[in-house]
Length: 148
Image (cartoon, rainbow, N blue to C red; front, side, top):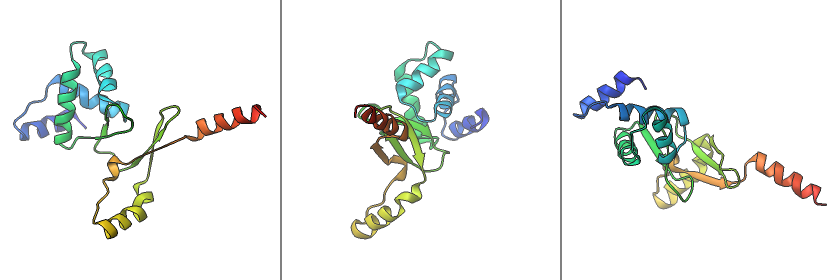
């Protein structure tokens, strides 16, 4: 998102574009999936005086404005990503922590069934499936094979 469009969105809400808001949004876009702490570290590389509280408040504002979304990919802090990204399912490796994305259409049969049976609408942007990525699975398989 350009600085001018962010400024316009903020102005429409009676807010102004601050360097901190721009830096936080830029960090979210650059990092793709990041916790507030990771975003804070990225922002501090450019502006050392920005504190973690400012990052949290800015992320809340950016989410209210529809510019970022969050999901919970672990037991810790939420993970933020740009809202402009298409909806996606998050695949999280429990071993290495890698996060990859899958097309939400994979969830369509389950989402349809939940809607039909329970009247429940799935928010695919918040879906996280935990397991083992191919690299970690391959590594475990090779380690087990060497042990035989």
